Image (cartoon, rainbow, N blue to C red; front, side, top):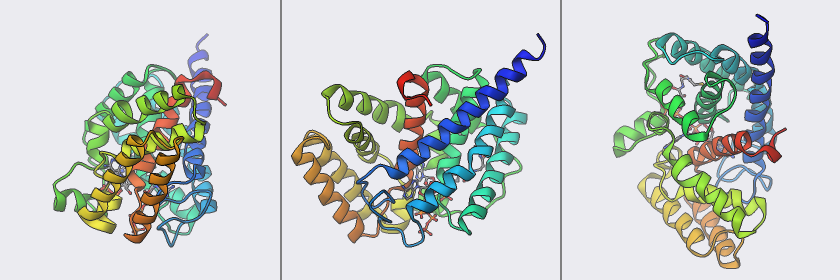
Length: 285
Ligand SMILES: CC(C)(COP(=O)(O)OP(=O)(O)OC[C@H]1O[C@@H](n2cnc3c(N)ncnc32)[C@H](O)[C@@H]1O)[C@@H](O)C(=O)NCCC(=O)NCCS
Ligand SMILES: Nc1ncnc2c1ncn2[C@@H]1O[C@H](COP(=O)(O)OP(=O)(O)OP(=O)(O)O)[C@@H](O)[C@H]1O
């Protein structure tokens, strides 16, 4: 009897880790994404390829598994926050070792890592609202051991006075809960392909996110191009509609011309697909 929670934790952690990795692979392969790495090619990135993204995703499975195992049925407190901070940073090192020093998934480790921990804290399942609220509580706690580095993302949030990856998590992932998941469901109900529904969900995130990847590479012009272009796609009826498809191709051209890539939006799409996978049984693997 005493062994039961541990067995559940191990099986559950393994399943969650594989689901998180699969969500990263689904996001990377989804095409055509404006400016991002996808099945067609490297987008606006010179140091990234689809093969590298997939290798990186696989290298992160043990990190997600450790995050889930350590968080299983634990309450939100500073001790757990410090444990997942350490595991997240070790995951970044695994990623860097797997990619030869290229940042393929830093933002994704943050968002998915918090969500994997949050589901595990809830015993392996729960409604998306509860999972994101639990992840937010974790993200709000201080992590004293975090190195004081001045990252590109932090620089962009200060320079442009906008929220970034930290704030998105601390606010319980509003771009996932209010935009991406509802759009995914709405586009599926309209009867287009699953690819079109996922691209529409990405567009929904891009209509509003302050993506610090875009800001760092292309400033406010890049951010405005991203938001307006994504709005045009959805207003034209989404990617499944010929006019929406055309608007997506236009946006892809504009983003490439500006060297802009919405890496933050891509991370949040991967996190959306992870939550969708947890709550949509037919997608479970
Ligand atoms: C919080 C993180 C993402 C650092 O953020 P910061 O903005 O300072 O840095 P950086 O520019 O390196 O990375 C930000 C990344 O977030 C993504 N992103 C960009 N904008 C946004 C946004 N508005 N919302 C969400 N994600 C975004 C992009 O992929 C971007 O590359 C993270 O690296 C971190 O501090 N991790 C610490 C380890 C930890 O505590 N982990 C716990 C969970 S595993
Ligand atoms: N399909 C994708 N294509 C490109 N980036 C992605 C994709 N999916 C997620 N990302 C996110 O985008 C981020 C990489 O963006 P970027 O290369 O602009 O970051 P950087 O290394 O900080 O900047 P730079 O490459 O300009 O030095 C990663 O943190 C990753 O999480």
